[in-house]
Length: 314
Image 1 (tube, helix red, strand yellow):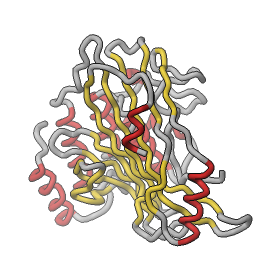
Image 2 (cartoon, one colour):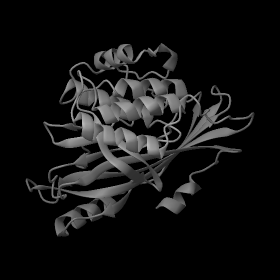
Image 3 (spheres, helix red, strand yellow):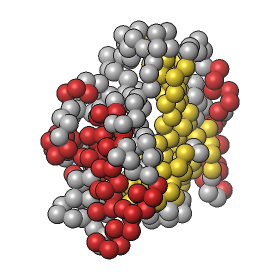
């Protein structure tokens, strides 16, 4: 249920328009790339703060009585393993589709559908063999009804890592002041990750991709990300699942993997997040996106009674 992700091993309004974003990017070439007084790169900080302001001027979807907020998750991620015992690790890419139906009354039943993962792309014979081994091992499709959005283990669906064994979905407990929020995130993470700042951006990406974060909190998270040293605009126009936005990210030097969050510059809407390996990774070429998650939120009148929606994604 906790969709926190690392390298996955199979072994098993103000308004920031597109023009406004371009101005921010040009500012970077004038002011220079790199952190400014311990903050993100000037262009990235400007884009994030403008997106935060914009987010507050676009309301979250209004879910009427009997309706559901549908959060769709479309992901691609690397799975790695050895074809033979003690053999070299190789990797291939998988597809994943999930849907969460959040009722207007959040104390009612939520519906969670997790579709079976399927191979998406292979990279040579051993990678193809590993993908076939994965397919033969089988992945399962899951349909669950979760009263109040709480899983069988007692954890809330989505939510955020608060540094304890059990995640929290109490967004009111998070500070709205950006520096206080960032300090809180540092505290939640403790010594996890390869660096304090890198792990903070991963935490923000993990939290945003649940798709259930209120606009006020999303805005605060954007502003907190603007305070993280090393954060830059990685790509002016990045597309995930057909939606295009600005990719704002940070390279973790220990692994040379870049964590990006992708935001619509007009609405401030969170489009998704990704991790890009700047070096080769278990046989995957340098520059490969080893994990990405696109998040789409809409309002629907009913929730499925089974997992038949997965048929279109397998």
